[in-house]
Every structure is written in structure tokens, then in C-alpha cells.
Image (tube, rainbow, N blue to C red; front, side, top):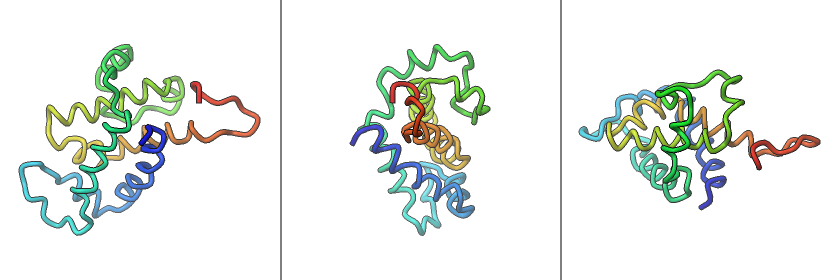
Length: 145
């Protein structure tokens, strides 16, 4: 699966979670160290598949750190940026922010689900990339797309 395909599939999946308060609550309570009772939606398996696909599609780039470290703010991956700031970032920079969220999960297991998915931060950045992929008639593509 290509990165673009991963983004197209992931946005509706994450939107569904974000718009459903019960799914968001389940995500915010997620811990790799508990049974995660109440997962009537099979979110745990779906989210683990989502994570695997992110790596396999190249959405989580191996070179993310070099690109991310060029950004001016250390913890930018934890927040939803102002639209004016977001508009100045390249696709590669946004992908590096998403990669930081995924890589941070390796150091603090579960944080991708209980924070970045639950709070819609991963969705925020993936939606921006998805919008950039849609061609606007009469307007040149952004960032090489």
C-alpha cells in the first residue's frame, strides 16, 4: 500500500472514532497493560492494523527525525497547529510529525491510541495531507503533488 492510499483509508477510520464519544473514551482509556474491556467495536485490533499499515505504507518514514528536527518547536507532534502555521509546512514535515507520534508510542506504549487518536491529533495531520492530495481546478498542486 502506498502512503497516499493509507491516508485515504485512515482519515474516515479515524474520523469515525473521533466523532463517536464512546469510541474516543475507549481510546483515551486504552492501555497496553490492561484488558481494555468494553471494546465492542474491535478497535484494539483495528488500531493495531492501522499502526502496521502506517509503517508498511511508508507513512512512518525511516528518515523522519532529520526532517522533524528542522522544525522550530520540539513537541509540535503533540498538538494541532494553527492553520496558518500548518499551511507553511511541507508534506514531508507533516509526515515527520505523524511519524513522531508513532515512534513516541514505542517509548510510551499506548500513547498513540490514548492520546493522539483519542484527541484527534493524528487525524488532524492526516486530514491535512488528504486535502493536499485533492487537486483544485485551476490551481497548481501543493508540495509536488
